[in-house]
Image 1 (cartoon, rainbow, N blue to C red):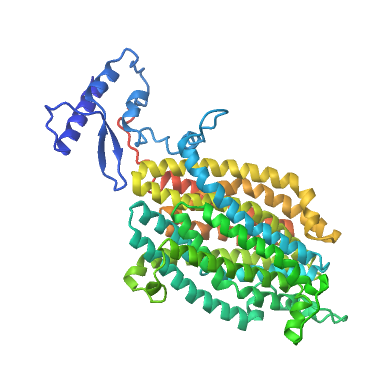
Image 2 (image 1 turned 90 degrees about the vertical axis):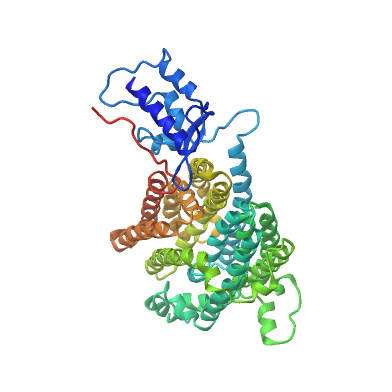
Amino acid sequence: MLRLHILLLGALAISHVEGLAPTLPLQNTSMRWSHHGSPTPVLKSLGSVRETLTSPRYHPKPRSSLRMSENADALSKDLDVDGKISSWSRLVSALPKLKYSGPIDDLDSKILSTALPTMLNLMVVPLVNAVDTFYVGQLADPLALAAQSAANQCFFTIYFLAAFLPTITAPLVAEAIGKEDWDTAKQRVCESLFLSNILGGTFSLVLIAFPKAVLRMVLPPTLTDAAAGAATGSMGVLDYAVPYLRWRSLGMIPALFSATGFAAYRGLLNTVTPLKVSLVTNLLNLVLDPLCIFGLGKIGIAAPGGSLLRKIWSGLGASGAAAATSISELTSSLIYLRLLIRRKLIQWSKLFKPPSIASLLPLIQGGLAMLLRQATLNVAFVSAARRAQVLDPSGVSGAAYGITMQIYSLGVVAHLGIQGTAAALVPSSRAMGGDEAARDVADRIFAWGSILGLILASVQWFALPVITPWFSPLEEVQRAVKGPAAISSFIHLVNGLVFAGEGVMLGLSSFRDLALITMLGVGVMVSCLASPLGKTLNGVLISLAAFNLVQGLAVTLHHVRVSPLRRRGFKLFKKR
């Protein structure tokens, strides 16, 4: 009876708070927490509560800690009454409702229809990069592969210092469109493009003017000097890497422009159009790769006059892969420009006009935290790449590390599809349906991310004996790849949680917390690299695994206990 009185008094209090006369019949209400943190009445009749409590099935046995019954717990779906909903059982209950026949669950359909095109879109890029590595590998020079790995690491280290803009743009556009505020969506896209042009132009100039200084982040002087100063007078890693990086830097602004266009369409929850753009431009890259690397002379076309044209006609060597990539990225940026104009998400007057500080505030607030996060990630991955290059002056370890990361990245982009889906669907669902809708989406994305990690780990493990020889005909390089590539396959098991959690945090604009979690993981990784683990290539990959393990545990804990989507629980009865 004591419980009945407490619940009846609580129901009457709710009715007074909402301005309802206690003598009026209550509608079907239960209780839900809104995203502002205040209790909101949702329908459930007081009579049904009375029936539940007086039902013959409701006979609690004496125990040290009293709990509500299943029916009473259904009264407050959003409340973690006994403190356990937010843990393991909560995520297990979010597993996809897969069926052998019949229509797929609506929530799963929504997630998969967004995630699969995103994955395919992102998957095209590393597949083409893998083809780049294949063609460079046909030069049968491990120094060329090592130079390609080092130059790409330097390019993306600089690129990601500006790539936080597209990362932030997607959830901001999704939130604005969820509220049907198209003017704000247009403003966010134009601001991101303006800043991308400024930052991209600055970084391109740095890479073109000072390539050696940038490359020394990855290639230590002792290694490059030793390789370049060999008695045979052969080219060193730096000699290959400098022209490669210069050609690659020409694609900096187009790459940022394309990334912003892709982010805008992801905010529109349209992932099919970016997939079409990616397929077209990367097909162009595939065609240009052999032509730029080996030259048109290989197919019997006479070279034109002029030393520069003659050099290009005869092939650029390893640098040709970078030239082909830059041309395809320029094509992609022009296509996105036309598409955004047609969708009226670009206004020319705003595109070339510096935005005000007030309008930039959302980008600046999230941008500083994301810039800190990316700078921290750059420290970790540059340290890993540098460690791999130092291990072996012959370039075999550097080549093996580059091939391993190329194989590993094929799975990472699938995880990035999950991350991008969470970053778009969580803010959109929250804008339209509140915290409960966003929580359902986020929990289910965590489940799909875990399933994807298991699939990718299995596929990579069993495919390694087949795909490893594709990247280099040199047996010593193939042997060096086996161990690190096997370790990287197991990292995908944790990546399912990592990328799902990061995507949810991006969608919730929890940029500061994400930066702090990243710093924690990077601290663990750098510590491992500084230990005896960093003296072998397998140890470098184990350090990467430690980073991802810490990230996975941290983002999962943040989701269930810290984030705005956690279940705010309380206990009705204390222990006696």
